[in-house]
Image 1 (cartoon, protein in one colour):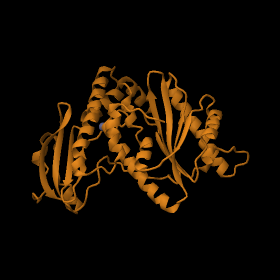
Image 2 (cartoon, protein in one colour):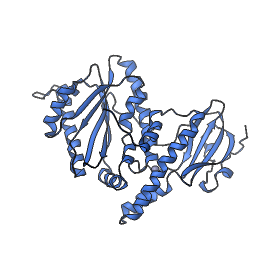
Image 3 (cartoon, helix red, strand yellow):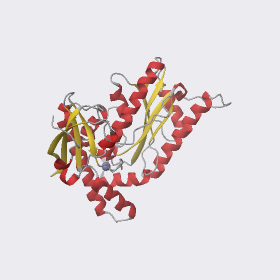
Image 4 (tube, helix red, strand yellow):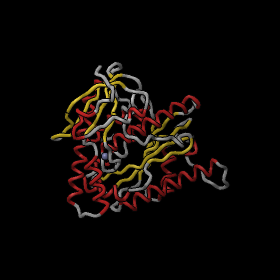
Length: 345
Ligand SMILES: [Zn+2]
């Protein structure tokens, strides 16, 4: 399935694709991508200020207003790595692309790590990208519910057949030993189009034509499915599943806000079998590199882009109590971020 990407999602998806992207020389690109994302967040903020105000809208707007105004990177210059060390995030990843990128990258990293473990233990398994779609419709809540319920029925079939429950029908997903899947949403002017992208681990490919027939029998109105092997860099293939939140920024602002309200509190990322129980870190920051000297680099969002506002140096201390003494004031970053006893390298 050839995916056409809008400039916003294409540029910011690069961060999700290369979750380990911490090479110092790539910092400029990374900051530019974050700037594009944050500009969209500010557009959403403007949009919310223009819609009838209720407590939910006011809360969402307050979160957006405080998100991503400054970024504090730490450059570990002896190894040429840069990590995002501090920032304020609203964590409303359905309406905030910067949070969506960070969330996507964190999820991708966690599932790729699990895949490495699974691959070593089950060399017979291969990853497949399975896409299941439901027909477009005007009523988002109804279509979304239809997708969720249909998926549930198909996965119940798999579980019951594999458990030997008498009379349970076979599904091609019975071949799948583990999967992680997300629910994504598009609307290109022809109604809402919810669909599911799944990384499915199986010893052989589920048959697309059989799966299509099963999907029609489950949904009653939809038969479009796609099954393809993931070859090459697994990060690239897996990204299709973990970019779901970033894709919300392809919607118009009004559609994006409507979708966020309808989907609020719903689980959009799920897993089963060998992919069950993967823990995605809560923090949207990067992990620090212990015990290496660094430069701190500070950026603020000014006039439509992140601009460098200052730097300072120090040594990473192992004692976490001492680390807590770092004070970062967004209003005066450059002057306040020295570690106690820190030295310029
Ligand atoms: Zn945010």
